[in-house]
Image 1: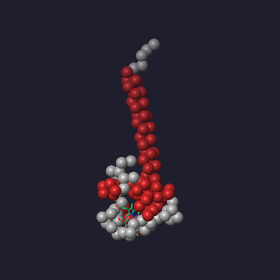
Image 2: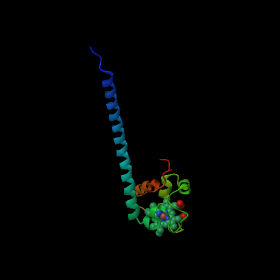
Image 3: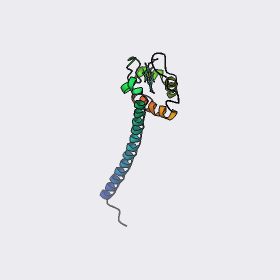
Image 4: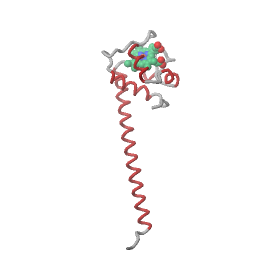
Length: 124
Ligand code: HEC
């Protein structure tokens, strides 16, 4: 039996390598775009639920020192559950409450995905 030429083996390994990298990249692309779709859905709901009126781009029109992003926000709202509580209850400093009748749990979860996307440093 003749041994396959080294060049052939080399080419074959390149081909396999290329294929696996390709598959890997395609996989990442897919989960990336899924994440982006989730964020986009959250943003649409954020606009629809009127949050955008006071918090365009995650800023705070009424209290500029209380944006929905950045280190201070991330520190105060480490768990998503704390954001849920705050939004449900509102605050006496101008944030209206959003009970379930106004905003469903699943819509609020999507909104939180959008809010978290504004602070890229947030630990996933
Ligand atoms: C009428 C204006 C207004 C609307 C509408 C509004 N907010 Fe707010 N929001 C505020 C104000 C004012 C504060 C600061 C209140 C405070 O610090 O007690 C705030 C604070 C927050 C905070 C805490 C930020 C921090 O750093 O302490 C979160 C989270 C938040 N809003 C989310 C939302 C979401 C989500 C929506 C939509 C469902 C929404 N807000 C709609 C005015 C608004």
